[in-house]
Image (cartoon, rainbow, N blue to C red):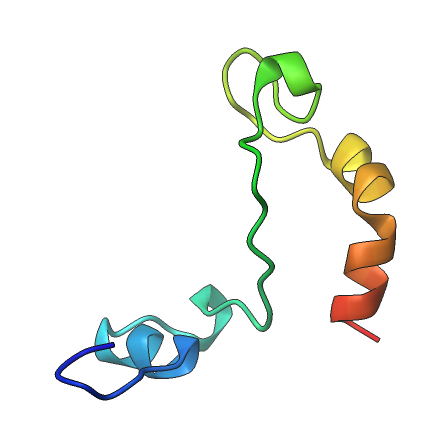
Length: 65
């Protein structure tokens, strides 16, 4: 909330001058961080796409159905 007005993701992205390809279409907040111990990122904190797709398959299908 900013000055009592709620802003959506698109409004915030536009206000910060992001281009269309930089604006996420949908997001889901997760309670746990992605760590090397969870197997979702490498020690260099690069994402492991296949592991993420497998773990969050149902969530991704719901978001983009």
